[in-house]
Each structure stands twice: as structure tokens, then as C-alpha cells.
Amino acid sequence: MVAWAVAVTIGSDVWLLAALLCYWVGDIADGLLARVTHRETRTGAVLDVLADRLSVCLVVVSYVSTHPSAALPAAVFLGQFVVLDAYLTLAFIRWSLLSPNYFGLVDATVYRLNWSPPAKATNTGAVVLLWLVTGSTLAATLLATVVLGVKSYSALRIARLPIPQALSGCAVLDATNLAGAST
Image (cartoon, rainbow, N blue to C red; front, side, top):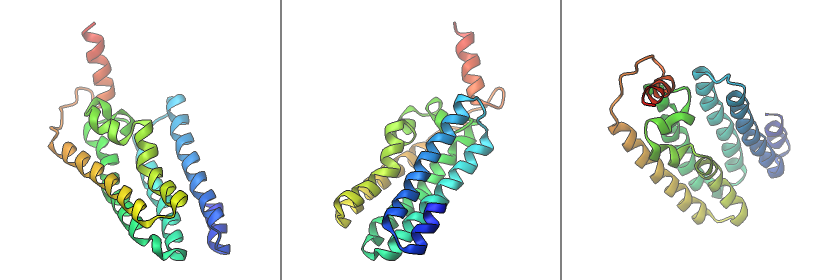
């Protein structure tokens, strides 16, 4: 937030990029730390989703305010990120999962398209990096539209999935117990 405040105060794209990089590093680090220390919680996962949207919106809206030509790719990107991706990322709650990192237990395809490490990097970073590297509104808009298509496909898959009856109230424990029972 400090980098973002400096960026907005002095009108610096470099500081705005620093704010985005700080967000990405922090987002990766907090999730990794929670998993490694076995301190993941559903509340933490939901708060992470909300913090992601706030952080990205602050940076993108600030950038567009000084670079109006970025409005179209930003609108497509924010529409899919704030609405569709939020819906997808919070869908883990329906299946009693601890976080979206375990969505592969429900649908491996949706997991690979949205939360596998390459998907996470592509879905949130690719549009921004493409815009920064090329400066092309068309290229950034096209890529944002492709990501929107992937998110739409994923949302349709999730909408068609039956909600399983959890045995213990936690699908991760259920999957572990069922796997242990079959050996």
C-alpha cells in the first residue's frame, strides 16, 4: 500500500509497478506460508480473495487514470477478475474445501485452468505484463478477452457440478479418508 500511495502522490508508473509487484510477492508468500505451516483457514482464503481484488483494482484504476488508452483492456480484465474470477475462486466454499488450492479434488480441469501455478501467473499477470512490454491496447484487450473466455468456460463447468454430500464437513479430509480406506 505504501508503494501505491507514493505512486498516486507523485504520479509514477515505476512506483505503481512496484506496488503491483509487492502485491504479487505478498500474495504468493502469505499463501505459501499458510500451507507450509499448516495454518490455512477458510476465513483466510476468503480474506485473501477480497484483498486480491482490492489491491489489483487500486493499481489498475490508478494506472488508467493517467493512461486512458488502457481503459478497454483494463475494463475487460477487471470485469473478469472482480466478477468471474471472484465467483470461481470462492466456489471452493460449496465443496467444504479449505481453499481453491484444493479444487482439483472437485474438478481437475477447472483447477488447472485457474489455480495451478502456471494458471495463476497467466490469469492475473499476463495481461498486465503484455501491456507493459508491448504498450499495445489491442494485444492486451485480446489477451484479457481470452482469459475472460477461460473464466467463462470454468464458471459453466462449476455451475454444472453436483454439490457432493460431505462426510465430515471437509472434502480434503473426506478424500484423504476415502483414499486411506481403499488401500
